[in-house]
Length: 464
Image (cartoon, rainbow, N blue to C red; front, side):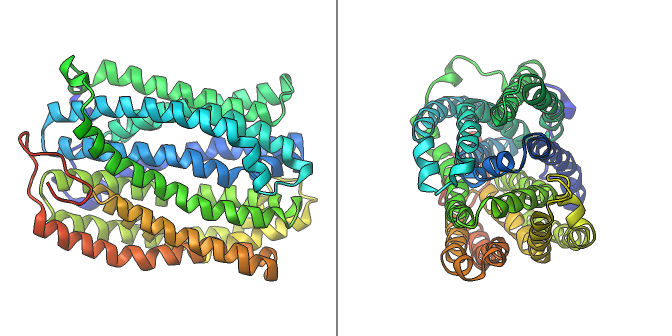
């Protein structure tokens, strides 16, 4: 095994560990958003507002399905982090093998199901007729690429669970530049329209997943799985599903609220849809550091729970919250001074109504960024501690808040109502997550003991 490929987060300064681990994750998130942004820029600039609105109208649906895949994979990686923290490497390899079997099953079932239902779902969402075919052409190809999504996210999650946050970022960076090149090739040379943008995304993610697989085989001797370790183990699969499915459902349940909101936005017309698309892309890019901090908390929490070092959990979450607060101030300042310039990357400067809407959206969302920071830090820490089902409940709070905005505020306030959907959802989730964290800490302190090679895997109730 390459000794410098893993990082033990159970010893040393929490702040130093958080920074060292989160910076590569941040770079990865930025590059992932970078090629998503480039997709949008290329579509908006070369294919027009209706193509941009078509792609944008699928955002919440994309998040609901692909987000479930990503959440499941993140959850699967938590028992791996627990076993790594406990130095139980054989048990860790068994978990990795069962992750692979489950990911294969989930990817096949989900791909077939959502591809067949895709057109009907877009109709249920009241996608405007003038952007419908663009929306369908884009999202159906993204859904055909679900196996590639599972491949990259399960492998990168396993690598990160052992403390290596750099390698997945390196491969993601390569695929980001590849995606941009394929975008231009498919759209400008082959004239494939929005389907070309979707195909570029799928192919790029597939390549990044294959690179992760090759790297793991060559560099991580600790992950060389023997014949017996490849056996399907119902007990381990139950543990993995207990971690992964709640995290996946958290994304999907949250996205249900976004789908309801997107349906309301669709009723406002193509200009409103394009405005949300442009502002949403900027918002997601600016939010990348929050995502990196949250992913760091999941690994940090998982390893320290596995090692039985519960006293380090509080130190880690406090340091990460301070980082989140500092960045929230910086991010709001960026939105205030440069928000309209960033939105102008996606549409022609003559689209004054779209740019004005986008600036309004970004300012209102930016004012509530600290609430978003708390969601990522606390929710992912709770999940890393082994209580994934709390993620579902937090997702329910977000879903309800967005649904209320869609049903009550958007019909009355129009686009202004849309601008308050995310902030209200973030605050609602925080109202649940903050007391939930302290509840989980108390429960762990009463029930937890350090894991070793003889102990059973941590269940989703926190009991061994």
